[in-house]
Image (cartoon, rainbow over all chains, first blue to last red; front, top):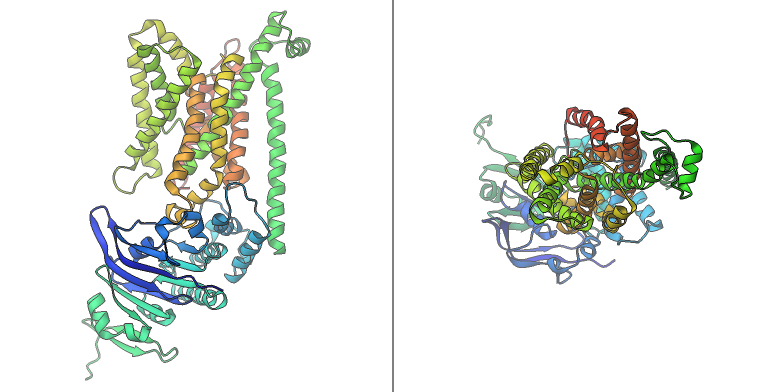
Length: 268
Length: 340
């Protein structure tokens, strides 16, 4: 399977008269899970939006296999690069199967018919996300965790080699957060899908990332294996927070314990 | 896999059933529209008129009902379809060519055209109406998008209704000083299909066909727009282009219809809601069904208008307002007016 390479070069982007990203360079490791973390308004979502063609860059470019994504035909790009935004809209009354099958959109032109490959892609996506038995249910009736699995199934049905997700675990309770992240690891391991996502929870980010990226002030402050990036010094710089970082006894990954002003044990 | 295939099969079967049912109702309504009117006619006169004879008053009445029926079918289909598209583009359950003020924009353009520029031909009416409709659509969308939160359903509806009221008074202001055209404009503004002739039909038909084809070609685009602009873009859709193309189709349809029939409200509001309940949210089905059900509704309303006020008749625009206003209130009062 060929791995697609996605990278940003000297990227600047923003909205109206505010520049959010400034001269950012970013290389997405192919076939790995990259997690972007950072304080609010540090440019995480803007980076993801610019890398998925939602936002045109002011300067610099985003290259997919050496070609600028802003000069690629949208439908062609959508066959390789998938995006799950933070708050997609489920039309009222739509069934799970119908919603998931809309992920096939970029694989069809004006006149091409729904075919066997489409059926297979949808069935696989339903199975992979474990929602086969929900297929006929209206999306409105599902719980938040089930609904998020439906959206991921839709992204899977798109069958892209690269998948960008903007905070896929927002509004989910902790068990569903872990469930969604496990699902993304399965996808990465079984299909070799390159995954780039923004997460809020530093510990989950360190736990699930192959490659952790910490952003601050519109730039990448640190990137690399979680053990190198999630350090007390980096947390202080990126979030302005004093913390302890220790090794998670189950995964060996770093976990961050915030030090507030209260409830501290008085030990040296 | 098996459950999936069964699902697809079942839903397409039920759609074929509904399609057959709607077509059967349409045929019955066409027959009713030709047979029923303010004047009672015998079956032999109806047959004679259908065969092309207009020797008696009864036969002539029936002969006049044929283009009228076709006009009701076409206007209903155009309004139902353009309503479905406007609701799709704006993700707004309250969108409708009447409520968004687009029909009234077409009316104002025609009133101005008649009063100040002396337009007279049906063709000129249509072009002027389409221009007015397009301008108003953009105007209302911009007004409704101002302020926080962008174009929410209620803000858009408010902007549309306010524009509609303002334009309606402007129409009166334009026409008031012109006694020579006031009667004609006022009658046209009620909205009716009573004056339809084959000549007028043939003028409006190319515009409706073009609008219909453009609209149908946007079904898949509307399906992706329904998931939100960001996801639609992620699925490879050119969002702005898709919106503009669908809007062009809708404006051709309701502008041309308004030029010939006057502003007929509420068909574009009711029909897509009904169709979504019955046939689901897939625009590839929703659009053609909205056209068919719109044709049925307007034909039915036209027949009702001939029966209610015998020996006079009620224009179809008044009948649809009576059906549509309570329906509008029901939609607004549902627990939350959510975006589609």
